[in-house]
Length: 359
View 1: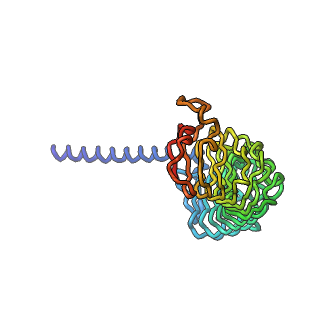
View 2 (view 1 turned 90 degrees about the horizontal axis):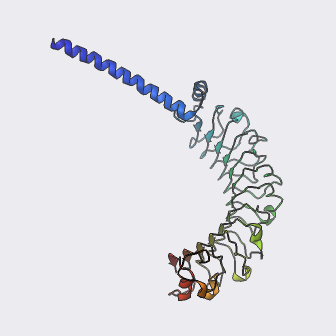
């Protein structure tokens, strides 16, 4: 009798293990298909067509990972791919053929390759009607690639050799809100109203570490974040920001701005929250708007600071109540100048919300 009970328990245990195995398998398949949000036939075709050089995770079948493989050419990409990672390879040509079926691409990462402008085959990008994110940082481009798909939202082409923005390249790109051009060879004649035409909804533009001598012209009024660090800019035209009523973050670190090149009310923009002017040649603290929250003035030639000169409102009108008229400055950096502590009392009285001063 005891032997019979042991045998029965053993059979029951085996059946239970089998049922649990089936249940786990069904859960996994359901999870895969649920995450993929794609019919099983497409899922099977996608995984089956995965290039041997790449990795196509079953739990994320719309993504194809071909990064860090030492590839010199792009393999044939499956038709249901949304996310394609080709960064950190040795690719020289962005070819039409291997991407011919990849018309559903949303995200294409080609950072850290050896792609030249001549290596971007005609129409390869415009034939991607859903592409929203294109990353081509750290390549060998000499010009902004064109034509680009109208669906594009982010374009990153930093640290290339770009010296030219083709006229009209951005026309029709109404969804583009981020443009990263830092670390290229752009001069003033390349960044113009003509070359930037079409950027109707741009929010962030990064032109840092180029060869600009003047503030760029033709920026759209939607610009909120403007990065111009590491250029050779010496002055800001009076009224420059009247055409940029939404600018909130402005970075002009590591330029050649002197106080003579900064008109008195040039930064009087109500939308501005963060102003960075570090590593320039300023001798005075510029007048700032009441709404500014962060001000970086380190490593200039400023010798003194006083409330009467820097307070955006009359110091005597600032009271203890917190209202819209009280200057909003919370962070002030002044180190690397010739200013000796302590900070004058009228500066503290003006900026009642100040939480940190670096001197």
